[in-house]
Image (cartoon, rainbow, N blue to C red; front, top):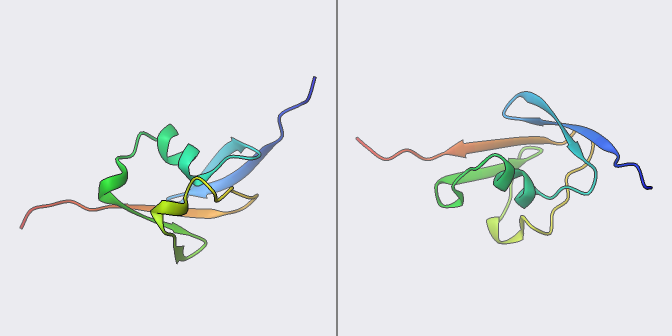
Length: 72
């Protein structure tokens, strides 16, 4: 039986342990974040939401997820 390797990343400043081979898309789904109202930054670079299922997270990656809130 293959052991699932865990890696640590930072999400909005908090350390999170995830399994190796986890995509940005998996993370967003796991956190139940509505995709339409967020910007996602990976290691200080904004990423295109069309590519999030192709981007796998690596050890010590830093993710910032910013919510847009309407109002005025």
